[in-house]
Structure formats: C-alpha cells, structure tokens
Length: 366
Image 1 (cartoon, one colour):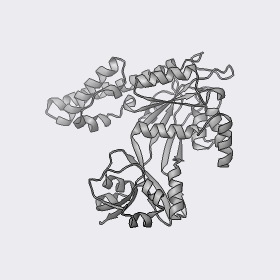
Image 2 (tube, rainbow, N blue to C red):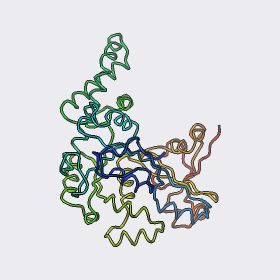
Image 3 (cartoon, rainbow, N blue to C red):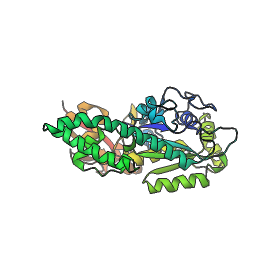
Image 4 (tube, rainbow, N blue to C red):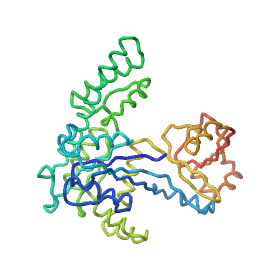
C-alpha cells in the first residue's frame, strides 16, 4: 500500500500547480480563475527512496519498483460549500475517500493572481476549509441519528455504540473542534473510522510561498506553522511554481543544480511525502532479487504476516516465517550472501514487528 492524499484549498491557491509538480504531469489545468478543477484529478507517484537504489545495485536487480503514492486534486472549496455553494458537496464526497488531507494555503502576494476572498490570509483560509468540513460532518452525523436511535432502543449493540460515538462527536463539532480531537477508546476505533468523517483525517498544511521564500518561508507561512503546531498537525513550506519548474527537468543532476541555486537541498515532493509518511505513521520494507528490487509500505507496528499481506493475501494467509535482514547490515556487508555468512539474516515468526528498511523474504504455504 501507499497512501492517498486529497489536495484541498480555496480556489487560486496553487493546488493544481502543486498537483502537476507532484505528479510531474500537466494533468491538472492551472489557470487564474475559480473552479478550474471540475473533476478530481488523480496521480500516482513513485516514492523517492535512495535506499532502494542502493540495495538494487548490490543485488544486481534488473528493475526497481518504488512504492506508489496517490494524490487527488480536489476542486477549490469556498465558504458555504457544505450547503452547496461553489461546486459544493460533490467534492466533499471526494475527500471522504482519502487517507489524509493536504490543505494548500496561499502564503504569497501577487496582484496578478486573484483571491476568492479579496486578500491573502492563510489562517482565515485554513479556518474556512475546516469550518466547511465540520459543517458537512455535522450534517452527515445528524442524518444518521434517528435511524440508529430506533435500532438502539430495541437492543442493537452496534447501533448503540455508533449512536454514542455520534453524540460525542457532534458535541465536539458543535464546540468548534474537528472530529480528530475526540478521544476514542481502542474498542471504538473501528466504529469511529466507519463514520468516514472529513475532520477525522490527519492534516498536512502546505504553505505555497513565492520563489524567494522557498528556502526559509515568510511571515505568512510562519503563522501557519504555529497554527499547525497548536493542532498537532504538520506544515511544509514549498513554492509550487518552483516545483513545477523542477518537475519539467529530465536530468537528475540538472534538477539538483537548479535546487542548489535556490538554496534548496531537496524537492518539495520529497518533503511532502516525508511529512505524509510521518503523519500516517507509515514505514517501508524491501524485497530484493535478481529480477527486481521493490519497496512496500505498511503501518508502523505491523507484524510480519501483515507485511506479507501487502504483497499478496495468500502470503499472509499461509505465513510460515520471514527471512529478514536489516538495511544497514545489507549495505555495510555488501549483500544477502555476506549477511548470511555473518549471521545477520534472521528467521522471524508471526509476532515479529517489522522495522523501517527491513529486507524480507516470506515463506508461506497455502
């Protein structure tokens, strides 16, 4: 698995430009008028991971297959979207399908690029987006209350659990807080996820700054970073315009040279992905052989059978053991055979918790 992030924001904040840069395509038309994006654009991107190149070189792998990430460019939200303003609820529905939300906020002033609210204020814009998502969640929950209450009265335990969660969540939303701030017991986590609430999803703020502020940020992005910290969220500073220019370069050395002239060490794509991984508590493990070196994504804390299941459900169902080598051992010793000779290949069972960077070979029987 990778992860699926919905890119949201007010019109004309740089969402589609960012999407084009992230996916290195021109799939999303970028233009200076609201609602340029009518249907959600979807792009799949390979996760840049230099570790994969190193293990492929050591193993002599013919092909390299990175883990895939999915970005969804969702049309610009405006004040009143939850009530059908602008393009309204059809795009709120698109957000329900993603794992995390990237909120793009405009942190640059340009008289040639209009702003739907008339002036640039990223904190206000972020609040507008959150308010519309909260209102949509409240409407969704209120619609479910009556039928669930009827089931709960006749002893339906599942309905009673869901009704209790809905009532508690509505109280949080009515207090002006997103659903993600609700304390949910472990036994209720699955039921809470089934509510598919927009404001229960983790948030990554992307501050779209002018080119001169790409390396250091500016006063506007500093304000967003402070707000994100208060919300236990993450904020990343990028210049979508620079990212679009970088993505147009084919040669990696040209890309690096261009970034260095701007005082940047890496692309915004890399920073966004890293922040997204941290946000969703994801890790990477590898499989490697003469034919291919491949990266796989799982959640922190997943055990060996779950990692096997990321490759194929049969691997998890018939899991016997995992032959495992730590990434550092594989690189330091120079490959699989050297690790075997040094006793660095381990036999791990069903309770083994996978570590980031593990190289794994699964034994199974179905």
